[in-house]
Length: 322
Image (cartoon, rainbow, N blue to C red; front, side, top):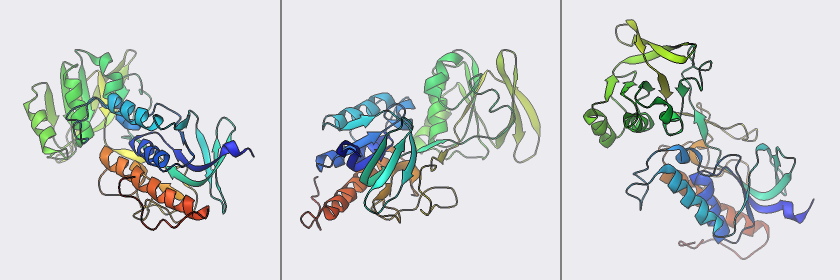
């Protein structure tokens, strides 16, 4: 194998966590490659506005993603646009296989694969995906200008996307299974003050209906009374959380009941040199800033591991401002 395919660190995933890890790895003079099959930035790139990342009172998700990527590439980061098909632990090196046929090896692997939208798993959801069913308001909101849409969910993402759609659609219904939203108070206040948004409390969507033109209604059920009714709508946007993309996590690494990977405080798994960060990792909060912090932590820990394996000087104390 060519030395060109042997790295100190391979980062799988180009979201905030992966790009943050790349910045710290490059600053630590590690030979690093980041593999991302889609657009750098991950789910953040699909967000309309970000208002809670330090240093930016308001910035679009695509702009913030671009800044992350530009910052990492300013250090000369190598980025590969490819799909990782397998991560295989080894004693001397870990192996990362790519769909394009390349085989990469490294002392450390940082998995930052995030997650995918959680589905309702109801009739019509898969059948009418792209025909009125969406998981991204920024991507598809344009198609519902002056139309009626239903947003499903009650957390920050659902609230943010409902507010975004209220700028475009004629009417937005926010269907939530409980009698109170889980979104932050500032988002709840904005929801209440937006005349185009009507919250459907204690309501679940049980079916998505359509005709030859696409989605035209949803079946609703009251979670308290059991009463059902149909609501006419042109589109359904689902924001009920994410499922961790843990398919690449090697066998033997511990997961919790929801599929999130359990790590130590260095974001390292039971297999030395394999780190898991961002929304794939078990933790209390899933925010951009937390994913970025995970990337920093994993990269610093990887730098210590690599230097130790290579027989470099003792690095018991890593520089605080690395």
